[in-house]
Each structure stands twice: as C-alpha cells, then as structure tokens.
Length: 519
Image 1 (cartoon, one colour):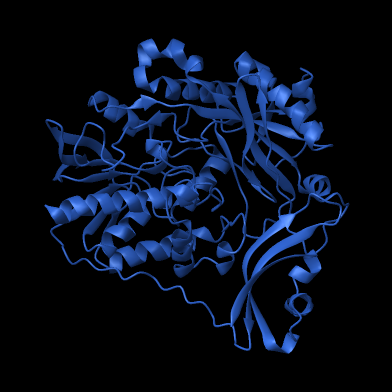
Image 2 (cartoon, rainbow, N blue to C red):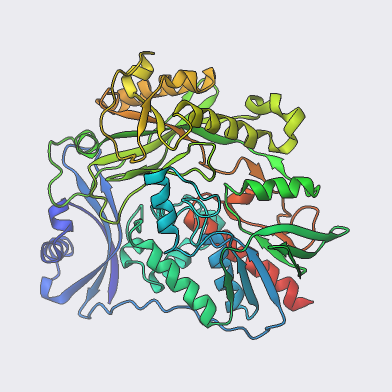
C-alpha cells in the first residue's frame, strides 16, 4: 500500500533517511521496519526562527520502493519526406526536434553557433581577451542561453503545458532526479552541457539533423506562405519553419521587419545585476551566522511597485558568478550562473525595472516595431562606452548609488573581465535610476542588511526577455499573417526560461507535424 503525506521537519531530519523514516513512522503510528519512503517534493520554509524543510513523501507500507526509470522517448523518422526546419538549437529547438521525431517527421536544426563544447573557448575569449564572437557566446550556440547561464528549471508556466514531462525528459537524458523533487529545480552550468550533448546525439541517431555554424539569412515567401529559407547563401525549399531563435536574435528581428512580416515591440525589463557575499544572504535569509551542513546556499525573491512600475529580482544565483553576455563587440550585458553545488562565495541577482511602451515611444518613428529593441541596444552601448569600450563593466557600490555618491573603490566580485567605477545615474535614464534606488531602499527594509555598500551593482542586466513579439494564431500557433511560419518560445515572446521554452517548442512541433501529416 502507498499513501502520501506532507511533513515539516528540521534540515537534519530531511537530510538523513533513517531519521526521516523514524519521524514518519511516529507520525503515522506504523513500525519503521514496515515502511519505505520516496520524497516527491521538497521546499524550504525559512519564515520562522526554526527553519523547516517541507516534504511530500510517498509512504510504501509493507512493500519496497522501486527505482523509478525514466526512459528516453521512442524516436524514429517514419516519414523522411516530411522535413521540418527548426532555426535555433536552444531548449525550444531541441525539444521541438524531439517531438517531431516522436511523431515520425524529420527535424533539421539550423544553428548559427557552435556545438556546446566548442562554445567554451569562445566564452573564455570574452573573459580573457574581451573578444566577442557574435555567433558563439553566452547567448548563441548549442543549448541556447541557459546552457552556460545556469540551467534553472523553475517556471510559473504551469498552465502552458506539462512541466513534469519536460523534467522527466531531462532526467532521461542525464539530469539528476532531484529536479523532479525540488521546488526550484536547478541543473547547474557544469552539468547541463552533457545533457545537451545527449539530446543532440539522440536526435541524430533517430534520423534528424543538427547543422552548426549555419547562418539563417532569409525566409522566402510566395504571397503569405513560406516557400523556403536561405542558409549560408543556399536556397532550401520548405513549407514549414519553426523559428526558435531566442530573445537576443536581433538579426532575425531585423530580417522579419525587412520582409514586412509582422512583429511588435514588447515590454521587457532592464536594470543591474547585484552581487552580495553568499554568507551575508545566508545570514539574512536563515537568520543565523552559519547555515550549517544541511541547508543549501540561500536565495531570495524580491518585488515591489515604484509608482506605476514593477521592480523585481530576476534569475537569482546563489553561490554564483556574473557572466559577460554580450552578443557583439559594441555593448555590455550581464547575466548570472551557478554551478550545480552553488558553492561560490558570491550571490548575484538581476534587479530590473519594468520598461513600458511610453519609454521607447520617441524611438518608434525611426524604428517602428524595433523601438523597444533599440531602447535596449542604446543602453547596452552606453555601458560599453562607459567601461572603456571593452567587456569590463560599469559598476557602483549599492549604497553609493542610492545616495548618489561616486564609489572611490570597488570590492572584488565574480565578474572576471573587470569593473570600472561609474556613477550609474549617468548611464540609465532618470526613471530607471530613480526606480532602482527607491526599490533598493524597499528591499533593504524587507531584508535588513540587504542595502549595504559591500554589495556592488553591475550594469546592465538587459536580456531578461525579448523586446519583440512575433504574433501568432492562438489555435494553429502559426504566424498571424504567414502560413507555415511557427514563431516559438522566448524569441517570439511566448516563453521565459528553459522549461517554458521547451514546452512551447514541443507545442509548435505538434502543430507543425499535424499540418504536414494531414496534408
């Protein structure tokens, strides 16, 4: 017999199988020798002085807990003539390809960047030599932006699709089963690349194709229908195209605009990446000088409303590193990542301000639906110029920024290309600076000790989401005006993170295959 139970226990009990069995045994009044447990969900409750771990456990009474086996899906091309081209090898593109294969069609992924291993050398060049390869960087290449920016799997997009299914697929391709249990699952930048390789090899083994360092240059139309694409100067006929190019594919947005394929400016968020010592965040969140061996590095989630704008934390990385995430030579962009153990000495998070249509309205005359993108680009370029036209980053101590003082010196941080002490109010428009400053005061009241001059603001955190939406039909998921074009995931404005992007990729694949197989 199996029954489910939710318990709240100390971190020590949660970390010790024997102690947990004894606790549950006492709770249900059944001898410990008769029960075995499987943890189904785990979260931390640090609201009270005594920190608790909330667990949902499956209790097996008088029967063993069988090991869960997560098998890779059955993949095979049964309709080789039904080719579906997918632009982009991020989570949306890869999971779209898996679904295409499950349905028997042949996916062909076109990726302008390099394979996941080759990307490492280009990331090192950004840090050491300040050289940015515009096709191979933290945003572009196999696995997409999430591969080397943490592999966070938490999503609020429960209504968009089967989150559990995506997590189980990740486990089948090599992720630890903990991602099925943790409230905020996380793979880690050091672990995710091998999983990406496993997915790619499965796609190729099943008859799909993955073409790296292949540039998507044009989409060919006949009236309002897709007729083909141009890749590296070669025309390729196709009537179906899944566009899964991510939130930083500016060349694709410009291409669609030139081709008069409808796109729209979209609200996004922009601000800074804040770094504290992890020890401080642990102390503030756990209210103890030492978190001990049973608690993970603490995270936080902050949000407030400053007049008519939301200001909130984004992509918080315990024990993490701030990374240089520019996609070209003439701008500076940050993001953060953590290794699987989250054991670094720093904690970082984006603190970003809601950017609204009124903020880019003055750019709409010249840039049309690319006005929000242009607003984003201009601030990134100002940061690059302020940092000496390099991948060093404009930075300021937190309290100095709030009090409008110059930081005479900066503490060490995890951002390895280097920092330049800058008054960030000279970089951001006044409404962003004021919103950030007021929000940091509010956050300092919510987390006593958060507002400190030992924390450093790094500018700019600007690639929170796409500043462009590619409109599509709600039912068919095809472009609102172009038959056969499936705008997908983050780059099209329909996802925000690995899981929601993967879900959207699979949905687009299903609709595309329905059309092809029904033809």
